[in-house]
Image (cartoon, rainbow, N blue to C red; front, side, top):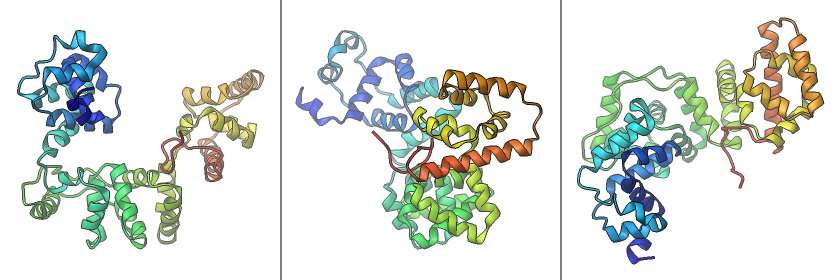
Length: 337
């Protein structure tokens, strides 16, 4: 491996590969990456310069024969990135990613916060009014907002989440004013959202989903003391019955041992086919067939009964998750390898 190749990070090497592939093939690769990976690789593509043919050949290694025909990157990499991301993600989704990648190199104001470490953002916000913090966190992606929230004083976290949950958009002029304040701190011009279409219970629930069970429990307990209906609404948004499709097979089998069959039949009356099949495949063949027959034979059930049954099963799943017997899909906390 050459000295130049050793100096490149894995993300840089991936960027070189995508630039070498051409727009259509690169777009096909990007379709299989998550949003964060697309942003990381896209940013690396935007920053690459003076990549020699020799370095490309070293990076691509076993693909050198096909790469030899596509190693001239030319100049206008910004336009290339726009075309590739639009092809891979569609114009709507690509717009925000493109802005982050291309503007992130010199972004200021609210947009610049997306490129800062959570700890640094938390230090900037620590002495701000909770309403200002809630607006900033609503603007950022849920995973970044969750990380920043855990860096803020514990006593203020519940109030911030409540403000996010009750935030019903921000007037563009107010957002621009906040952006200008941040611009002064960065000594530049801001580039970011200028309309107030964010915040609300769903945004708060997404952040709670990503901060881990321990922190979530403390914050939810504090919110419940102040506003029980809001606490319940957040709880409902954080994990819904359809999310059980994300539970792995072993966890689903554990859950089935805890759930009465008659309760499950009622709960599945309004479930989509994917979730039904998830339950059926984790039963024995005989039990699964009996459940299908019982479900087909079951007459009309009031929606309130279905919702009550689903909620009871969700409470069981949450308890099992807290006991470490089941991993709820989409939840924060520790990952398993």
